[in-house]
Length: 383
Image 1 (cartoon, helix red, strand yellow):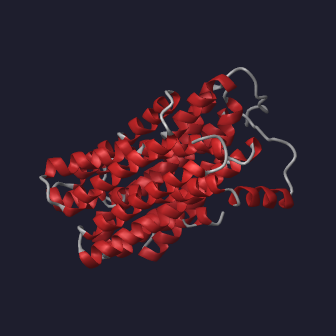
Image 2 (image 1 turned 180 degrees about the vertical axis):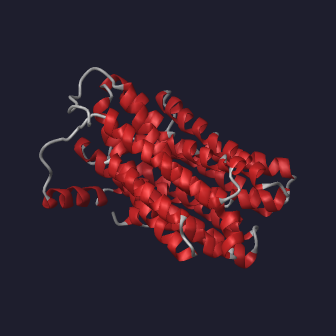
């Protein structure tokens, strides 16, 4: 039975916050599992890296065109269908369904947290939410320690989604907001955001960050297995560690922003580190240990970017009421990067080898720096 309707007030429902964040982590598991399963899927279906890139990128397609219980239901259905897929096209179709669930959860999660957390604790709740992606990816990478069959990974993540549905229905309050805005009002809000320079630059920067991050992490287990000659389990453990340190960057961004560090400076610095690290990683000129440490640096410093961009939404929104629309634009940018990154990187690696990926990620880092510098002249409070 669903809990009673919530009344936003002074008390924070930390149990509900925990369940919402856990739902986000379950959603992020669906992102990370494609990376750890790539070697296994490749062995079963005999595919090249360019084609395998679609296993990761098609997940975010619906996010470019389009409540947590419904989202986790879609994830569960998609996961179980994927586990039973006899051919790769059906596996891709199941990933689209999972992607729909991911979109619904990432849209609903922040809105629910705004209502179940008190104003004084809202920043903490949102900081916890910002860690759901690296946490979920890290847990997914650890699947390589326990499973040698990618179908079993799909079945387990589907079961976790079912559990998330039950917890959400039982614990998270019904927070219906009453009246719904008209389509005309929604169109006007979208037009106001898209005509403002700041939000558009934020969205494009998020797209470039997602392209860089997923270009590496969707292929990191494969890279480690080929470069370091390690097993899938070891590659998964190392990838999980590299993903988990992204959380440090997310949390560090909040501390640095609170101390008055410029948003532009943070994005420029993090983009520069990601670009230079990617060049060192993909060129393969360094010893194995140094290459892995660069992967961890790429992830940790890169975590500064999403937290900084999300915190910039209320600063650069044309009006305070349009902040959710700006956040939605950022999520669209993230989805765009998730679609383009894996396919582009997989294709260039398959055609030209691992070193070719250095140029693509390096170019994305340079563009992200230029976008960040463009924020200096954006309307709103100084970023």
